[in-house]
Image (cartoon, rainbow over all chains, first blue to last red; front, top):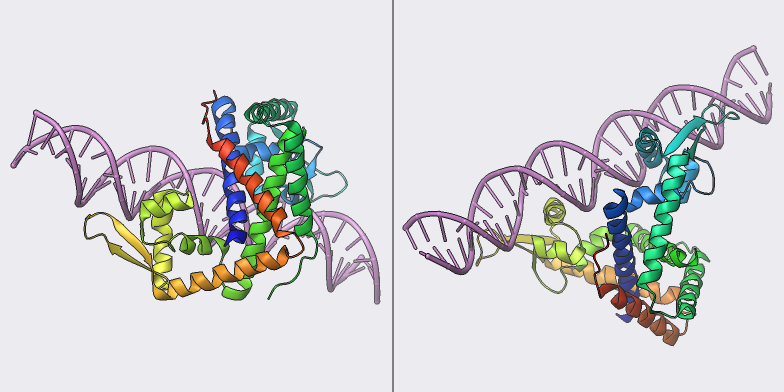
Length: 145
Length: 145
DNA sequence: GATAGGGAGTTAACTAGTTGACAATAGCAA
DNA sequence: TTGCTATTGTCAACTAGTTAACTCCCTATC
């Protein structure tokens, strides 16, 4: 009993965190959390449809359907890769880039304020624990039948 | 920068945990994780459409659409509340109950095995940390504008 | 050069959510 | 009683995912 409840607690935790972020983005930027994630994934540089899908942990088809929405709003540019006829490269426009920086900053700030009464060393230790568990889970994919 | 990454790590962690659970359920019980959650929520006793929605953190409409699928498979029963003409009560059939117990047990077992090399006191401390953070987030809803 | 394969993207049909509008019932107050 | 107001569930239209089937285009090999 005690075991599985960790996963329930984790699920509740991320759900609360994400809807918190979503609420801030909707209220201040008229934007959803998932739109934010789409743009953030492009921050490090242009990606193909498939590459962005991998980064968002979503199929290429899902990206292909959503991309035009962002292009229409001039947040991203879609241009075909000169080195590969079929491949499309998605990149942030300067408008998109500005939006990402601003929203990312706002969320960071909100997070910091929310946890201002936690010692930063505690948070760091917590993050380290999370990473330890995550890394443990990534090893030995283990085909369960 | 360091701050927001905690939330990214958390999101990755639950996504890995949940797809792990999903894979086990699909392979061994031909069932998805979200179907499992639907049934598990009814384990403590019958719930109305709205009540189940609250428990799953989903709207009443979503429950209303999915419920017939489970009824057709004789996993739940839908009967109107004798004390309230409009209200519908959803409850597990014995088939549903058996399935829930079996799958919950399987997932618990898989979790235990997966973390067999973690000291259980470490896991307990980790869970306590999670709860501490979660409780912190639940306080002061704080209307952000 | 022809062609077989693989990689990349799109589309269709599906599932699972959402919101908003609605219908039906419950419950209270006058 | 009668009549507001709440609660409850359903429906329609939408968003965001999935898988499977398809189309292009590139590359290697014969």
